[in-house]
Image (cartoon, rainbow, N blue to C red; front, top):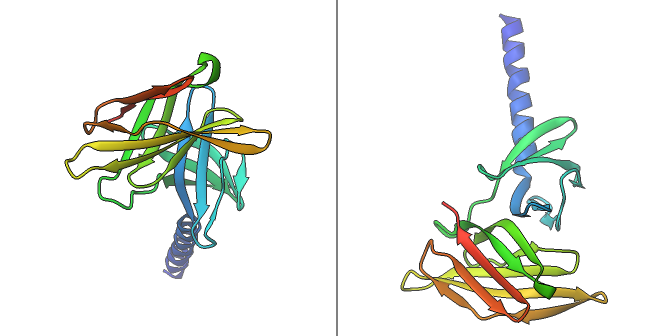
Length: 191
């Protein structure tokens, strides 16, 4: 009997300790394509954000191990133990959408199969190369349509150059796209 009670308390402490570890780390965003996978995590207790991480890189003692894109779950490892972390929920009800598509950058270079999560009212930044990023902020308009404000961020000589593009309005769930000069994108919301 005492052995069972001891085992119960030991199991309880392991579960409690494990849930505390997971509670301090938030999976904040991702951008993946056939050529790259980048993730952002956040330590909620210290209010520190990782920046862009690749698989195998670490942040605050957690090492990125794998990503299940269908479930939008990131597996991290700390102290030899694996933890699954779901992508954060939107601050707005039904305010998260996952999009997939193609981005065109300088000299007609296309980055196909880009997949990322967008959160209503929040800017999501997608790295496309060492020197080019695309930032999109989606909002829901009063009539129910979706509005996408975007900008390309070009890093040259250590400085950021911002190239804004026209705001796009689309029906909810419909593709949205824009092309301005050499820069453009086309995304399709995923179910």
